[in-house]
Image 1 (cartoon, rainbow, N blue to C red):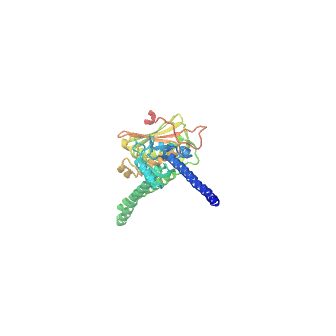
Image 2 (tube, rainbow, N blue to C red; image 1 turned 60 degrees about the vertical axis):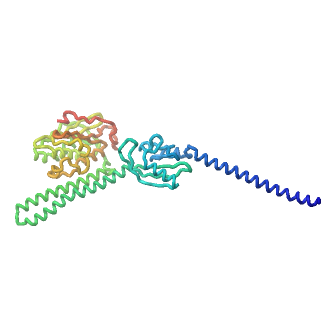
Length: 403
């Protein structure tokens, strides 16, 4: 009997130990599971941005924002505020909110191009490439790259190519028709001379347009002004006047310039002569006969102003912002008759910009126009690499320039 009791006691001890281990393991598992659930709950309810993300957003060049489950923006980069994507800690634009919601549902990153208004109150449109991705279990990260300028430049390129095709078609077609007419009128010397004269005019116009397109392309290059030098403004004006004198006299238009100014600027003399020449040619083209065109030079602080004033037809207020566009003409019929290409003022704009200056226009229909080139004045300390003009300088013309 005693042996049986001893055997039962020997079995109970291991069983008790096993049962204790099972109960202890279950308790440990329960505690671990509870801790895990606690951490998940803390992550879901936490408003803190994951480590490092806030610092990255602070130095990010592109627009970035971290959005919580309620679509509140808990952190945004300076670029997001600059583009007007965030307002009062919320995403302003519905397309961006839709992208965030889609990523939150699917758990997968998406990249899309969107066009949105700049800010909650503005009507200007911006083009963004947006990438949205999950950030942990709670947040969604939105990154937006502003591609507005590249899209605009692509549109300008397409328009430029389309305009060139259209503009070149006219003289090329005219030359073809005149060649056919010339062949049919081979036995009529008077007709031959008339058609040959018109062919020569269209050929000249085609050559001028081609040259101006090449010149404009060269000016748009980043290294268009690689070797600037001190340029005598009076010599630039005299050269431009000499280039236009014969045409002006044939239209009974007097080219009047002021006394020598002695001013100098940094730049390329040939480019500056081209710019002033184009302004004078434009003034002659749109001036009545007889009349006069005035060219004056003034200096204001560190800026030299070259003003070309005519007594022509003037420019309507709604066209003032467009006169420097490629192929834009105030008077299409007059431009066709005189062989104008619509590229002259665009070339002027690019020449001046390459020299760190700008060009302004004042005009009143029926009274004439004044175009003013503003260029940095050359001094002993003027750098050879010219920065753009950034200070707000007056554009008022002196009485001599208006004369």
